Amino acid sequence: MSNRIDHAQLSLTIVSPTNIGGPEKLTTKDYMYNYDAGEVYLLNNYEWFQLLARHNKLAEFEIYMQNEMVRPNGRTMYDWAKNTIGASQLTKDVLGPAIGSIMKSSIYNEGRKNSLNDITPQIRGANGEVYIPGSSIKGVIDSAIISHMLRKNKTFRVNVQRELKKVLYAYNEFRYKKGYCKKLLRDIFNSIDKIILEHIHVLTKDDGKPFRGILASAFRGISVSDAMPMSAIQTEVLKKEDSCVDEDGTHEISVHRECILPNQKFSFTLTLDTAITKEIGITSVDQVLEILQEDFDATHELLSSKFKKVSPSIFKALEPANAYIGSNTGFIQKTIIMAAFTDDEKTGIDIIRAILDINFGKAKHATKDSFMAPRAMKLVKWNGHYYEMGGIHIGR
Image 1 (tube, rainbow, N blue to C red):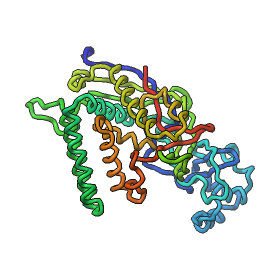
Image 2 (image 1 turned 90 degrees about the vertical axis):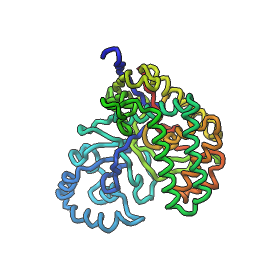
Image 3 (image 1 turned 135 degrees about the horizontal axis):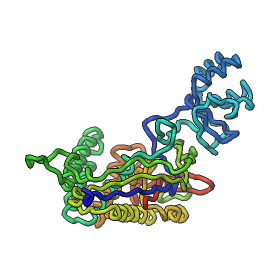
Image 4 (image 1 turned 30 degrees about the horizontal axis):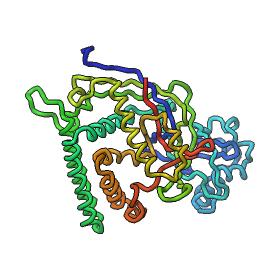
């Protein structure tokens, strides 16, 4: 058994601001943004209501919530509280147990209704500690291995290409019948999933019959633990900005995410059952790390070759990375498509553009993504510098 198991304790270092959010979003009723201190307070509602009751302001707060907060020109919760009970009562020391937890933020746009709008918080454990789920890391590894196999195996690549090209037929013939076109895309993606599963199929039952679907996958031989922090983790709420391939500057998007800041470190374990993974050519943890780097380099090179108007410093900042993870890395999900079209980049981009236009018609992908799809690179600004989100380095 020991000969078939390759087990390693690995580090995960955040290279650029990273958000791995859960299903919840914080609305303006869930937090108070103290822009004077640059802190977002997640409120313990029971303690917060108790505090307001001690100031005899609970009834006024209820009126504010019902009538003013919902208005476009309404005050933020912090501005209401500042006017009502005074800024001196709204520090973290005075609020005490009324604050469930604190997120740092230096963003403030004076005069806007709710200066941060909805916030996607970083996922945390039951104890409130920031961590990175092993399932997220495994998803990155699995995707990189599939991309590697597509680049190296021509027969596999041609089979996937054949199905993906059906997207263009569906789009050209039925783009104006959105519902039907989306159904065709689902059918195509299901066919691609079957091709991939057949290619990584390695397991059979004792009677020789194959397990179904992912149960038969070589990826069952890859186990990843949750990545736990090696020291206290610093986060900050950052705002999304888009940088388009054919435009100078950036466009602010009213999307806010709590990001783990650069240079924060986590630790996790990666275990390979090589008796299973060797069937797809994976025999060591070091080989997995090499594949991660290969996949990241391919994506990084593609982006840097297309987004010529983006500051070179943005790409340089990610040179230490070997993977992308988490929110705002939506393009990375499409790298499997680009890996399938290593020898035909234009068709790969055309397919991504068609998928985007079918699903997000109002964004004008059909007319504006002629050179690159998607045409916008997702950035955040931290500490005076712009970054691509989600850059990490996994290593020993």
